[in-house]
Image (cartoon, rainbow, N blue to C red; front, top):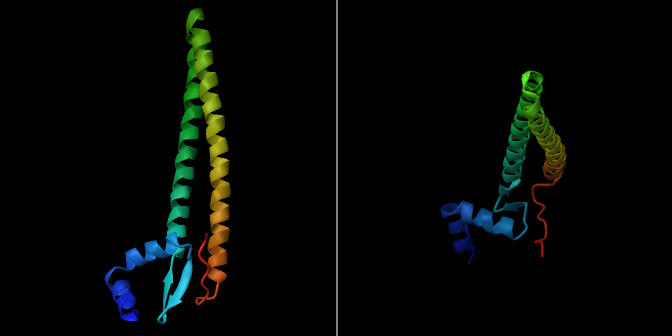
Length: 132
């Protein structure tokens, strides 16, 4: 049985990795070599950070468009001013929602950083019980 497990580790480490993660394991030491799933959390953290940065760009663009609409409004015919005001208001609300989402992503990044720090402090031989 041990030979089969060792062969699987060498032939398909990603399959073993996925199976262990689904079972709830985050870190283990097996046969002297450490299998760590910390990398996946790091990748997830990087994805959230990229999304947060992208949202910052979107929010900045919303503000630019709103400012541009306000400058256009001054020269617009009276019957178009209400329409421009509505568009500006919608853009400002979207910008506020984007800011709120950005705040949530920042909290998520902080939580993931804390989890990564906790993982790094675990002894390499510690194995968490599978989640049920």
